Picture 1 (cartoon, helix red, strand yellow):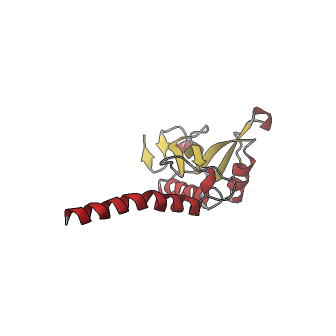
Picture 2 (cartoon, one colour):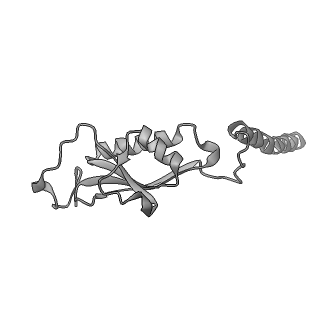
Picture 3 (cartoon, helix red, strand yellow):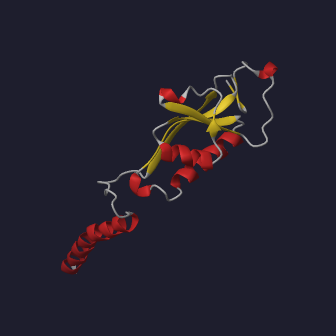
Length: 155
């Protein structure tokens, strides 16, 4: 019995690398470099804070999607998730900095409804600030500015 169990265990171990390789090949597209080891498909770094004008904003500092996972809707899903969190927390807008040279990301964000923010520097700086205002958000009154309010949260 022990010999049979050992043989079955060896067969399982031998099948795993092949199965893993087949799974990797299924998700990779022609011309893409294969990720080594366990590589995250994507990540996003954000923070809820007061914006330059003291309004509450959801600031996306970084977002990255591995090349073999791009153009599959993952970035759109992550952005929609961030927007849902921002609107649920009472943020007035979602803001991000995008390198001008990253034309693919800029085009995606514009398709998702982002536009050049009023705080954005000239494009000659190499980056721009994009933002999207919460649908149906009322303008923040001047009397509420500067009170340490971040959405529904109080500082």
